[in-house]
Length: 106
Length: 153
Length: 263
Image (cartoon, rainbow over all chains, first blue to last red; front, side, top):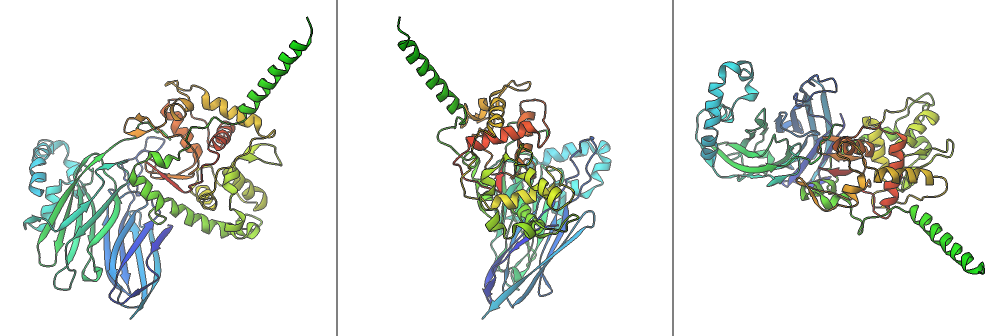
């Protein structure tokens, strides 16, 4: 699964930073039919967790009401330099993971 | 605003009761429950107050497949006073609970943006659960338009 | 009667007809030329202009990976031959579709990538409209973003251009509508909740909200054909390539927007 993450490269301690993530996924609703008229099974990224230096800072439970190629934009307080790790899973059990480094000064 | 929403969907609820024997298998799936039931399960019966939550959606969505949504809760986001979770519901969607977001004081700001699917024009509801055990909510009305041309590709 | 006036008349007639022929090699452009973006809502415009939120950028990211990935029996990557994409592919999308020197046939960017895979990499070509081909066309197309479309009509591709133009003005399907009746004669007017665009192909491949995915110009052609209830031609068909050339010429001067977003 292709994913893109955007965070500022560096931040001051205590600064509220914006985190954006986009994942390439059809977010199949289960209500669509294929060319043969058979229902395409529901398959959505149902859970995404973001951990900052090992501690969970954000979690999303998503349903078929989230648009294809899900996009999330949220915030966190820059506390220390380290790593943000994103993990997600879809209904079929397929997982994805991305990590980005954050440098915090001050 | 929430009471308005609930009042309006009272008819839907009656209809659901009438249709009960026919919809037994569908009703067994919690994801298709009416929004009031979902909210009741969330709050455990606690009052949902109007306010503190801001929900931004376009008045007119070009396509229901992807509509921008931004929800913000007025909160200092401190250890003592913060937003624990935000829940989004679209009553006209086949599965009304669009998403649940869990955050905490480390978020710094209780604001989340995403893109949602809307199965037709409707009133979208956002409920926030706060650390003091209170629930706050707001709604936003969206008109969803359809494409002019039928696309069979 | 002297032959002179007749000769003069014949000369005039020839001059006029040659002008007509000249004129026929240039597409009739809507005035002023407007990108499809000008006919969409603010939501769609903002989505396209935000390089992170634009979902098409996910395909670009995938394309970047594919560009560097060795493939086929030759074990070569695109980068292995073409090097830095920013240098080698800048402006490439402005010149397609064009005549392939080897076969003398018209090919578009998608076709050119397929050819590279088959001949240079000795790999299975990607299927038309496959996620991989859309990823590569998006990635290569992005290298021409902001540059004007510049299809040149000459003796080699004149017949393709003329066939494309004929298709553009031909009434089709149960609706009995031509491309021109919507996008040349009635752009800017309302069709249901939408405003009819001028129908330029400068943002392809595009992320269309209707499709919930990335799609090629040929898929869009099929959408239009289905809209007028005409027989759907295959993706990559010679008819679509001719039409693509006509549209490229008609959009001459408009800048490339790849990866575009539309409703």
